[in-house]
Image (cartoon, rainbow, N blue to C red):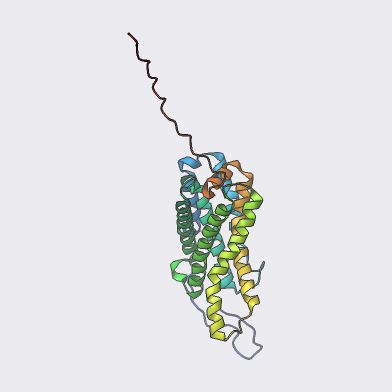
Length: 271
């Protein structure tokens, strides 16, 4: 490459040539998370047309994660791109939970919670790492990677709490309201200790508006990624039943106990 600028007699118009070897970026890393989702769709419980509807909310989240920098100019370019990659990774984690929910439905609540957490962490963090590449890991990437891991934990806890507070009764409005409340409470519990530390360090000069603003942003990100998958479960009977089983909504009653019939006692014969 050669830099060129007309300096009007103040110097050379052409700078020293610089050699630069440009390599086409690999398409394997961005495609691998999609291949993993396709592999989950090949599982026996997902071999039906209804299971493929999960690609709609995943496509919505992936579309938002592919937004150009010019759409939202709130962060520097590098931070904005990493944040979008984190949002896309959250979407892949939730898609994995929705596709694996048949193995978690109607299990113990703690087992369902651990299944949601592990599936989201595994798929989300791997998708995020593949998108970033090992050579570009820096402080910003590590910070948003930690934020991704905490967001997965918050979503798993909030969904479990919302299912518990619904008391086994399914209703999309009730579930949505409890889920929003649980997201706010869990994020406050996580951010609260850091706020106390900052208040102690700064002598009580930390503005409370900054706290509520940060909580609002984190709740908005997690709820915004979760919302398309919730809408899918509300309108699609296949995933509605899976959501009920995952959160123990409309719990099925235990089968009645069958007692063996009491053998009839023949009356004693009289001689």
